[in-house]
Image 1 (cartoon, rainbow, N blue to C red):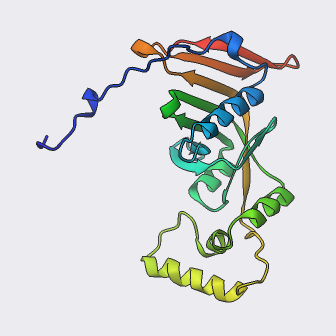
Image 2: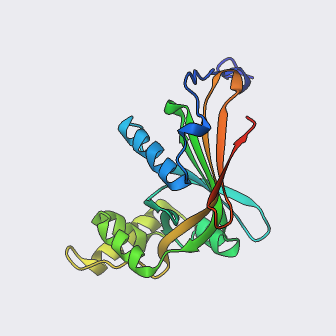
Length: 219
């Protein structure tokens, strides 16, 4: 190691976790509980509280992960949007399962979601796409997401071509290979930091018609 290297094994922070997370604190279903924590994260002023790590795997089970922005959630699941030809898009269709991680570390909290993936209907994609800034809509047409580019100029030239195509005022529909993906939760874990690494982990697991089973996991 050089003199400027910081050994990661020596970086430690002991979470306070004075109140912790108790079974009595939880809502009966994951959606209501997630909504509570998401509102807390927004109110706390966390930067991009809707940022989440999305993990997918290809048909051979080789995983990949990246940070994506959550764009909607309801009782059905959690939605993000992407180019379906991107790595995550291709993997989501080849192996339709994913995991989401919300790293709300300033609040000593995480949420981990695991479940199946399905595309959202086209009307939902169109409604969201129309709400995006015009530059973002143009960018969705210009970028062949995840493909190898020879240089930055190739991307910039593609953007200029799209600007010329749609002009300043023409409507911009979503590209045909661009849309939403919904993760349908099978498990949702709520993680609250506690001292001595004895964190609280409470997980919702999909049960039968009775609803959600809530169970405590060892840290």
